[in-house]
Amino acid sequence: IALTGLMWAFDWFSHSVEWIANGGKTIEKEKVKVVSTLAPLVSDYPLDIVHNSLRKNHPQAKIYSISLPQDSLGTIGTFVVYNEKIRGVYLQFDQYSGEPLHAEGKWEDKTNGEKVWAYNYDIHTGAIGGIVGKTIAFFVSLFSASLPVTGFLIWYSRNKKKKKLKRTGGSRGAKKVAKGVAVNKLNPRPVLKKPVIKKQLESEEFLEN
Image (tube, rainbow, N blue to C red; front, side, top):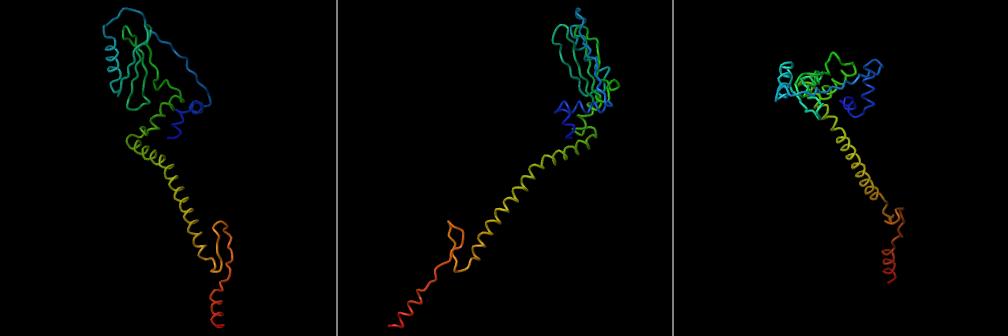
């Protein structure tokens, strides 16, 4: 889960994984620029033509994502999503006629590095293993997220116990000080008390009288 997260976080990591998957080669595909042909509208509803085409050619798809063209030469972009994200396909249609122009993302056309990228999301969420995989990924993520919290609680409890032992140890040590020894608060070194001879003086005065 952590490694698949790094695929999104750092470009250098994702490029390295693709490079390894491609056998130590950097494969760059030529980008194809697709534009619509300026012509009168074949239909008043070209989006309906696109939608019907998607439903006919991809009946098992889970989601059809459609984006509108940005200018007069732009195309209607669609992304067909299946239950398995690895089977997603990007299609482009003419905005005036609704005719298909270009398709990319087919599984058989992908390089090994692109296939690894396609699997990345399903591995990260556990969807590659169905409901069982998602459940395992959930508990693994929950356990990993709890580690900093439990680590802090363990550190705090140990630190608290050490302070408590220091306090109790100091009070016990003070009780063990001899009776004839006093401890100055400002100076922790023991100071000998002067011998008390009051009772002895009283007994000598009584004998004299």
